[in-house]
Length: 217
Image (cartoon, rainbow, N blue to C red; front, top):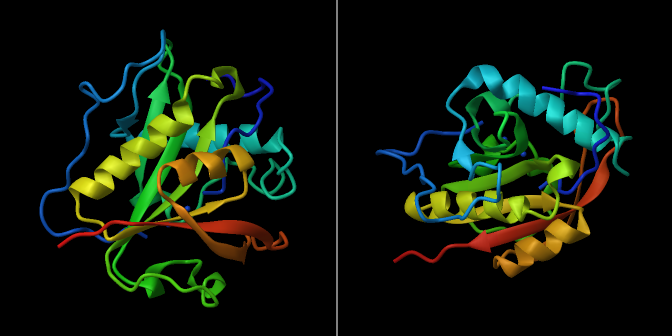
């Protein structure tokens, strides 16, 4: 996979320790859900964890060539952008005809706010109290594939997963205007702002905190 191509950020901060949900989880296959663009796969769950490194590199390449390079860059993350949540997250990917990962997003499940690494940043907000909840993050798209609706496809894949697995609500951190509008169209509500930091040496920055509630009987 080439890593020296210029990239730009299409997406958001929209991040994660996933607790297991009792019972069998539903992994949405893409049969009939999407009509992939030419030379692109539909969204699919990553099953080969040896490919996580490709996702980490894609994240750095995208953010380093965007207006958010002071938060994520090669100096801060020389081995690609990853954190402790990646190993336990569910990762959705989209590939091109060369089987390169050109878009990705992740999701983690929590059964308590205390499990959530950014809970300290949310104490001033009114959050739902039902559990489990899901955290959407690390939505990233290679600039060469903008305009194919990949951000929406990755968002919908995760929404379908949450619906099938009785997740009570979903949380996303977003500071990209395009992605903010997309998530609002998907019934996420902006509940306010929070300050988060992705690296111990970087200053916290403000993100919009979006919530999507599911209503189960």
